[in-house]
Length: 376
Image 1 (tube, rainbow, N blue to C red):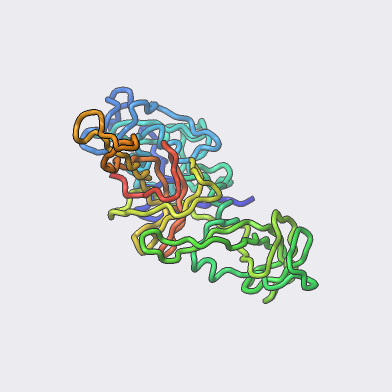
Image 2: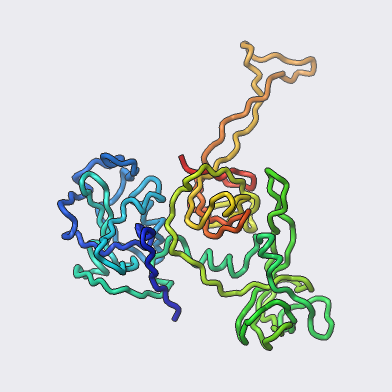
């Protein structure tokens, strides 16, 4: 069974899988949340939710974003309220059954672990949990599925990917049950599975018109039969024809989840240039942005999405009921309505000039062309 092992990075674990190993009795003089006003904490800018519970029992399927949303108006502030015990070298993962408690220390909100899976005694050893059980920052399966079958592709990612060079018996198209040959597959071993992706439409930066990447269509998948270059694989499933030139990507991808959600330290203004097979985007869907590492973006960065305000015709700027033309239509001047916040996205993969983000919250319809900016 695949397990998740916690790797500690010094400052980072103010972190998301945070060291919540501090028992309430170890915190000097806390007061419970119900003794304090449900507002921004005294001396801080941490926006505590007015409906924050005093305690919460972690449930299977929870993410740290979900949990933090219960306690904070802006979930990306969670590193500010996790109470980390600096004497504990290897903090635990948060797991279902753990009881989290909101307390105040010197006027500051702190989230601690009151009980570990129903047991009050806490031990300092590293806990190992299956990835399906340990609580992660974002839905692991959503990101892993996308990375294993990518349909939004960075330009360099496409250029470097292995490709289908031929089909057995000189067939021109392939389907489930057919053997195929791939080049560039490296040291892949027998039985290792790959997804076949057909590269389709180019993705351009709407600000510079630079080619950033491509959209892709999932073709099918199958294991390696014979190692080498070219390597031989067999398609065990397919939903469309496989063609020479199609790209191959490992079906199983290790996706890091040990980043800390936080706002960028600089002003970022990015455009949503593509979405994964949807026109309108909702929670936990993947989007591509026209900014990446060169703009300072990194996994864990949180951006707010803004819908561009509509342009309306002001027919009343000169008073009255609006002047009419000879054909009956009203004249007026165009007016740009203000942008509206539509949701929140979190970066989980950053290339040089493009990045992938997961929609964490969607309060309005999010569409291609909307802007993603540093939270204010």
